[in-house]
Image 1 (cartoon, helix red, strand yellow):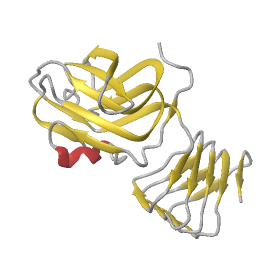
Image 2 (cartoon, helix red, strand yellow):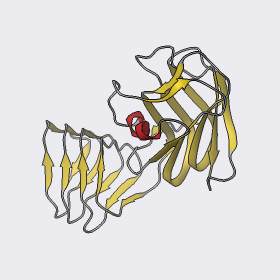
Image 3 (cartoon, helix red, strand yellow):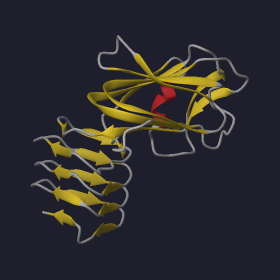
Length: 220
């Protein structure tokens, strides 16, 4: 069974690698369901997709989907976790039967998430979208960064001095704390603050989409 604290972790700062088609790995987290990472060949045992979260956190769920490529799921799979990218522990296994796969398990602290294909199939294995869930920790944007989007619902994000943040898409915040610094923030989509605290700091905030703030949130 999985942990009841099922917060979708922000994908900012992730590093993705794979056994196949390594040039397309970031298409699994670009927030565009029309794009994908794929194996480029029929699914086979030994193919893998790996996420380096950047820091160790408590994890209890991993979701991955082949979305519009309905048959491009692994015939069988496992999810393994590691703190050091050396010793991995399998926390979930399953048989692929549909495009969307959700692996839930008892919460475990890890930095690396390895999704393995464990048997052969006739179709490619594709991932249009992948998400990791658990309990977020405090994070710091230590250097200027660009990401497709950022969702904050728990924990805290601090923008270090001199580190700008550019988001190609939306910034929805339902909880947690964002502490801005002295450098710019650019939001390419909607800015929706419905919970938690967003402190702008002295740096400029540029929003290309709609901006909404409700009474449960604090903006300063």
